[in-house]
Length: 206
Image (tube, rainbow, N blue to C red; front, side, top):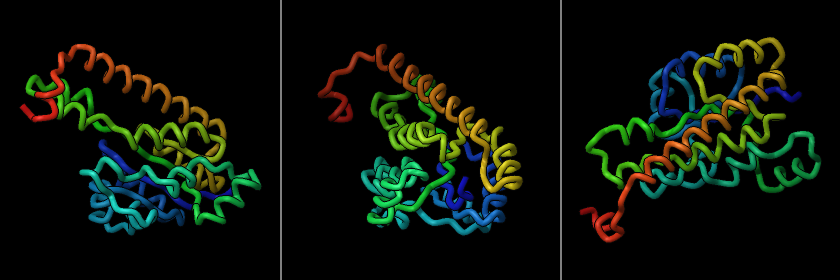
């Protein structure tokens, strides 16, 4: 399998990320990131490309749109051994993204606050994160997806040994993604089921 070239890291839980990202860079892997994660990595002395620079399109709508772009999702979803995919990627300037390290907005922590408003809860429903995670998990044959810092060591070890992770590890990590996104959506659904919303008061901020 082709050597890993590029990783996209965008985290709410940033524990252990400096060490993981430093080792990726030492292995010759380019880092892409967003917002606070990019700042934390730069503060650690690492060179990071903002996703907005990678796509040529700015983060916008108060951060609601950051990674929802064909250059990101094409880079994740293309099948590396598919000749037609390779042709289309070359035609549209799509570069492979081989590692996705993402975790999600802390919805459950947000709504656990008794003073949490509906507007606050809604803004803590992650869209781009689950979308990237599901895309990477779907394409586990080619992409390593990480949602748990506990998986950093095995990923690094396998890359050092073979230039990439093993299919067995990628499949295991993909399964963790779908377990996480299922739990995440269930928590959102369960909380919204308890809410009695008046559309006028919600949109007017009352």
